[in-house]
Image 1 (cartoon, one colour):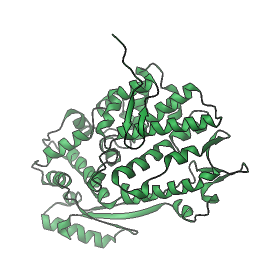
Image 2 (image 1 turned 90 degrees about the vertical axis):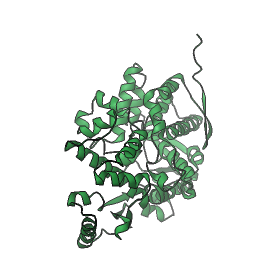
Image 3 (image 1 turned 60 degrees about the horizontal axis):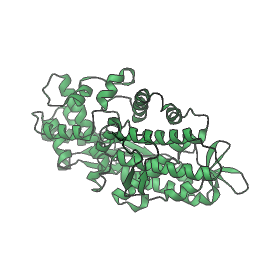
Image 4 (image 1 turned 180 degrees about the vertical axis):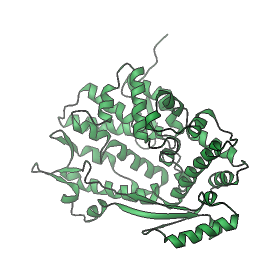
Length: 409
């Protein structure tokens, strides 16, 4: 029997044709761990705000790999030494950088496994795959964990101007229709270079960097941290919390094996072993949506009401402000809902709650974006730019929210 052609091409709506660069990449894409990403939404519940945002982590991973291919081509053309092994290591690292995301991506990051982020789970998947592929992912793991001696390789995968960010801003802007988030990824990549082993941007690309950072700010406050999306994700978190509470009290709950495992067990880093990883690999958005459809008919009025609110998009009212709501005012709102629906204090906390969200578009203290001037000097983009907005973008912005049922206003 003839061996299958592994150098195939994907047709992407953002970049056009994306080639698979090697048989190893083909086999990784074909693996069930990676195919699961087809069933993990890229933007959680953001489709409840932006109807077109139904793209997946699978799309994003392929797009990031394509941009990495372009970056390698540009750097090699400029004389930067990248071996064939390093090249493939970069492709594997960026392809698998988000493989550890759980259902609805960031929305449930710590709901299933406490204190276990998707980067940690991605690394566990990569280690498991490295065993299956007899050590072929060792270089990619070194790059992914930032341990490779060539720092610019690490920065291409994880930094303030990596291929991950370049793709998700452009892709999420496309699928949401938010034009302010669109960036010229190709232009930015063309301006990349390496000096003293570190990634830099040539001076003529400074305005593209400015636009990139502004686009990042727009996307976070207009899309990723949109108040309606925040309310929906908090409801989803509360649903899992309530389901776990009912199960611990001995209540009956219809739920599949993989999801049941994470509801019945307190999973954290200390016990996230190979068995847990395998169970995690069987979880995706479909499991959560299926559970919500079943639980909306559960006799527990809190769980059923929460599920119905998400499924029917009957979301809570949310107020987002620069200062937190006064304690007495919040308590008044809390008591009003508790009395109106005759709920206990614990039950009311699922419907009336507050919190905060924050974002810093440019973290100048962590792998800052360096600009290579024509005279050979290197300066941080915020110091070199004549755009005063960049100084503001380096500051953390925090906003406080309070959520409560609409019919209690």
